[in-house]
Length: 348
Ligand SMILES: Nc1ncnc2c1ncn2[C@@H]1O[C@H](COP(=O)(O)OP(=O)(O)OP(=O)(O)O)[C@@H](O)[C@H]1O
Ligand SMILES: [Mg+2]
Image (tube, rainbow, N blue to C red):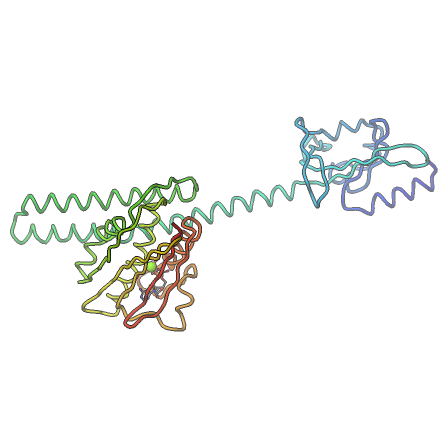
């Protein structure tokens, strides 16, 4: 090549941020500054004359990736000090001064790969944190119930010096049920994040009744009536525990509000309305309702008015996410006469 042409080529090669190699019959005949820097050489003269395969190792399984709509080949570069650098390359044939060369443009992937790993770790951490606060959220109520049973037993044993063995057996049974539910919560959440849980045929009315049983002690303590208005519906193929989880979140919110507003005859009604493709489940209470200025925000993550009670504000957000993701469903809330009505549509 003539000197002028060479200078021109150098200027062009050095104007890019990619590394560039010019190869003739397998040997390096030119390289730009960017590549010299990536490979940690002092000057391109140390590269020129070497076999291209000395610095550029194609991956054994020819991997091609799409980057900005072009097909690139994934390779490993070998630096001056022997470090391996992930990169992608694009090879083209060019003709300079009537001689044919291969020109290789090279993008160093180290930074991109690092960012990718960082993002992956961050999103994993975030979902782990979310999972822990959700488990904590689901555990609060059964923990309270177990604590109140224990307190009751302690009180009774002090008072009459003896607890009827039948009573004791009953209380132990309900503690066992709470513990079983708590341990199942962990599995359910682990499954929830694994995304491979199993659907089953469930009777929605019966499942609603079993969810009510779980919170019976809190209902009694606060003198709250839950009326489940039964109807005949065929079994639905869905996720049983997630349905219970949604229901418990809604019921616990009503219980919280009834206690907070000091309502003497707390009442929660659960109604089922069936249409061709959807089952609507309506949960209404007489807890006084939600102020107009916040009713539109209750499904936002971390929105809570229960700061003194450590409300996470995840309850309704979770209901919405689970309904949308796993039930093909929706949830919304309306003010009614003495309280609110949460209405869920589940696809059947
Ligand atoms: N039935 C209800 N009556 C009145 N206010 C309600 C009712 N349900 C929800 N809210 C309001 O919506 C807010 C958000 O509810 P959400 O369940 O998401 O969180 P939280 O109950 O505050 O916290 P956590 O669920 O962790 O206890 C509550 O803080 C409360 O102000
Ligand atoms: Mg809640």
